[in-house]
Length: 134
Image 1: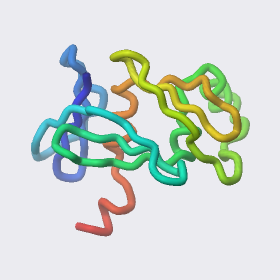
Image 2: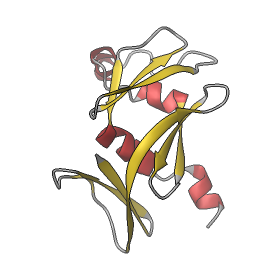
Image 3: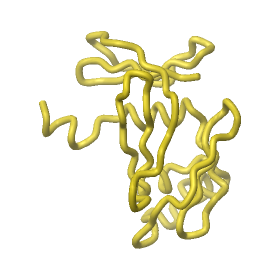
Image 4: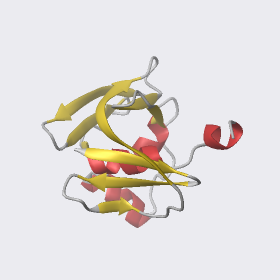
């Protein structure tokens, strides 16, 4: 299980093994464990839900571009197809035991297994609305 730790202008993701996945913090806040994910209506976002009810939306294009699969990694290393296909959506998200979530996209790519720690790291990235509401 992984947790979000939000803080002023930064976020941390801690693993259940006490490892830190991302660290740039100045003011501590509360630790929240990730309890589930949901596909948003229309499939354009995956919503990561914490035990405190915090719902953090991850764009389908971001998830496709950051896919941890072998094909996704090779694409990034080779500099190929950096832009997601037009009208990309998430068609399925299936939890894989306690490890993470397998996400299938409308372009047929369905090999990406996103570990909870990786989703926590992506969800902890500052997003546009973080700046608009502060």
